[in-house]
Image 1 (cartoon, helix red, strand yellow):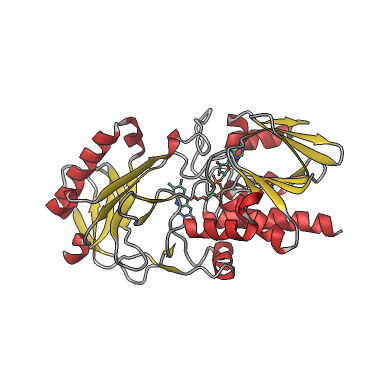
Image 2 (image 1 turned 180 degrees about the horizontal axis):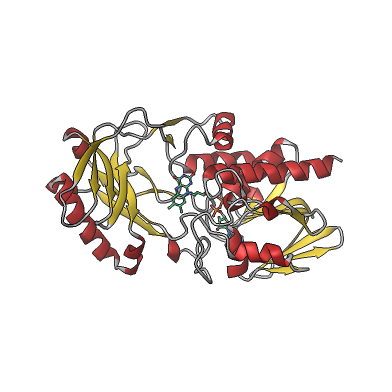
Length: 356
Ligand SMILES: Cc1cc2nc3c(=O)[nH]c(=O)nc-3n(C[C@H](O)[C@H](O)[C@H](O)COP(=O)(O)OP(=O)(O)OC[C@H]3O[C@@H](n4cnc5c(N)ncnc54)[C@H](O)[C@@H]3O)c2cc1C
């Protein structure tokens, strides 16, 4: 019997376990994948070892819950490189426009060493042994004073309290069974809750030298015409490894990897010169292929739709079940800040109940 069971070992699940442990309460986390971190996914390409982000990357001073957690964990962060000329492609028939990025713009930050550093630090604090990987939760049932969770392999866990942190839409898309069922109005909201970046296609290209900087470019690209729609300098904190990283158009998911690379190289060599083709490594992630982040919606759901809906603030199963996760947060729903805020909210509620 556990005091608290947490479903999902992304930023939200791990933050919830962190806040509970700080209050002296142990939690066990059940995670579907063979890895922790969910939509935070820092990859080190073989042989090169530059941390490139296939998931969450940036945050700003306004993300106060995430900032507070970074300070508590003593994790350094640094400004996104923006110096130099930006490129904007508006129409295929028009030459690209060059623009200066105003230095007055609110800075975005990145975590030194890669976003996964926050995940690794939380795991170290919580204890690896508290996280059970490869355990997709399939049934959540109220059994008197407790909640029982059954995984798809049939393993059973019992807790006094449960926090579910998986993207809400996956609750219906994965057909997770709740006994008794969740209230109908909540299910309707869940069915129409957007999962931020669930269908993004990300890429990163590592280079020996920051050739774009040497030619006065910032590495920033915004395009309405090419396969790369957004791109930024992605060099590391120490500034000794260099990369460009961005988003491909959502339709790029329909192409083969070789076709994506060919189109990207056409675009980058055209805009930045032939050196763009001389790369050390190419990394990509098509998130819609990842069943523990994305499932097809039943109907159109707009970005951020129902993120932070007030029903997500309630508890269920007589005060034993709480929902957290980025999409349940009224503050920066869908983002890392929302993941941390919702974790803190759920942990505080449980701490209050236990200390009553
Ligand atoms: C491409 C991309 C770019 C992004 N960029 C940014 C950015 O720059 N800044 C920013 O703030 N945010 C960004 N985000 C959003 C950010 O990643 C999320 O807000 C945050 O990581 C969500 O954390 P979470 O714990 O709420 O959810 P998740 O990270 O989705 O974690 C949920 C966990 O639940 C697990 N799970 C799913 N189903 C089950 C089940 N049945 N049983 C058990 N476990 C299950 C999953 O495997 C996962 O580990 C980006 C996301 C993506 C995909």
